Length: 208
Image (cartoon, rainbow, N blue to C red; front, side, top):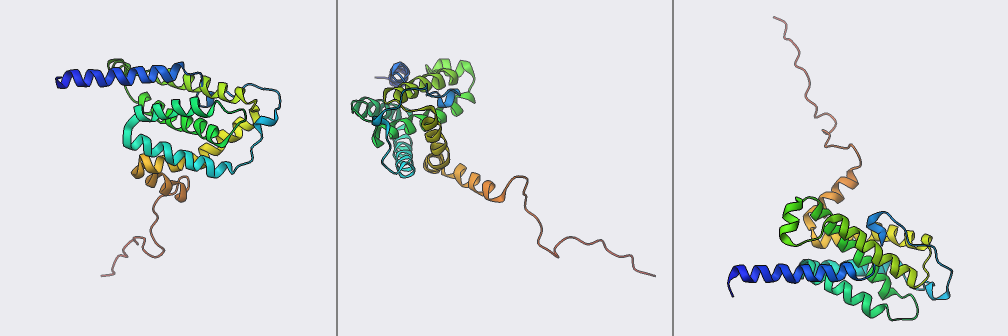
């Protein structure tokens, strides 16, 4: 098989994988929607450490993304939903699927949004809007399946943003994560300032 044929086959495999995920059924975290209101149910009770669960989920999907790329991450997320979505009750592993879907899709949306439409078309890749909307449907369906309220869905999103995103970014783009951390610690509008006494002082005119 020639290099061209191999490259074309890889693009086709990637496209089919993406289309399969799009058809999957999940949130509208990235699309700006929220999970639909649903009747309260005992199956939605959270009994685990959500912070630890989100951080662990972020670390796992980041390592998959860094090692196998977008296709490997998509396959993992797809299998995650199919496997843990069979449970009768909402669980930590299923919550991890949602967190990973959000983190990974958000990364692709940011990357694809920097590319020209023609370039995406040649790659056989979906547009950022299609990615975000598909993820929104998947996660909404996931929350609805276990009667997770809007408040709980928003709480999870905030937790993923605060705890999961930094872990994910640190592994996938360590240099960018370090720079972001420095800026956050420095605070808005803060720039390197000279130490006291080190400012340049105007020279005095010597009297002749």
